[in-house]
Length: 252
Image (tube, rainbow, N blue to C red):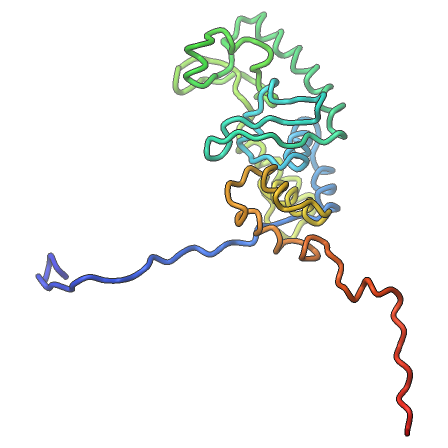
């Protein structure tokens, strides 16, 4: 109007439309078990770690050996969303599976060293300061790719971690096998982790720290996904004990 017709429209006082919060998709504990049953090997372990620790997809894929603290039952997340670090839980039931998985990775690591394969990718600062860290055991990926591939940035052929599309396809096939009537992605496992903690009585502040949310309002969205709202608190009526009917009204 101003440039084409040369009409001065003055100032507009308006606010941009805000996108409302979306209720995340959540699986029940029984459905999580059905999903895991449709997976095998490393994909199943990845799904179980993601659900058991509440990791984001890229946090899972970028796990390195020294991020796992099996003795203390912790997973250290470095440079997560918002470039924040945090510590989350590592389920006790997954420790023996991870130990066997790491034993297999040691053999793969020895094979890569015997073939003189370049070390894994490191952040730029670390690569300059510790040039040989990429070949050390502690910096290897927890979930490496089966075959080395070309690094598009450096042009070096090295072993990278599993790609996100590969794991997403594994989850999609397992969800189709279980015949779920909802769209299931890897991130659904993180949503289920948070919701099941709240349903189990975990306070919302603890869930916020485990998920790495800077604002508790982000965590509160999972309150709407619970089977019973209010952190599992019982109604006062349910605490009265066995209910007895009132006596019949008399005619007098």
